[in-house]
Image 1 (cartoon, helix red, strand yellow):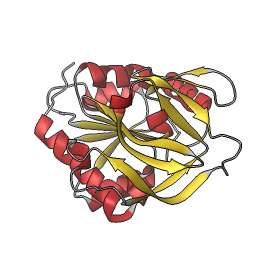
Image 2 (cartoon, rainbow, N blue to C red):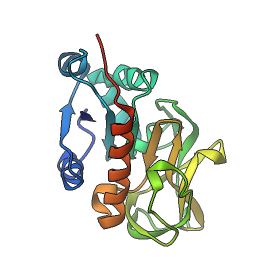
Image 3 (tube, rainbow, N blue to C red):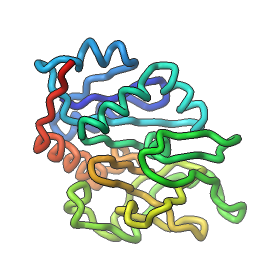
Length: 219
């Protein structure tokens, strides 16, 4: 089972459609009670979790807290279930954001979300090519430097540790972390579900990782 978290901050239809194109259905969970009901038993194994997100960082974190999904994400990480954050969902994985004030994130990866410099046109919107790719990472198998993916964002992550950057793109004089990850925590700044064959390859790789994990959740 692949769970798509829905605290009201993401475009669920495109993410669910992307999963269908790679042969999987996503189960939508909107709060901690639904998680406990659907996933909190050994008969409903959760193999992977996706956290999509659009909009402002602070609003997104407020929605996560209000829905009880912060504790769900913490459970997912503790149980070593593969987690994939998309767009703002990726940014939420980090420590803090300066978007419209100072906002604490999930702090699963060390780093800060900041606005592009004034010299850059925002949002960074449309197709852009990957300038570096750690192809040995299981999420990036069959993805290469020069492949194009679809971005929509005005803020980017300044990571504390370079090893957390799995792929990057260049925009506005900035090397943008396009894919980040550590152990089973992953994020894509771009939208894989809107990135054609390259995005489907990444989603398919994530599905393979979840299938290999075969994680069960027990209450």
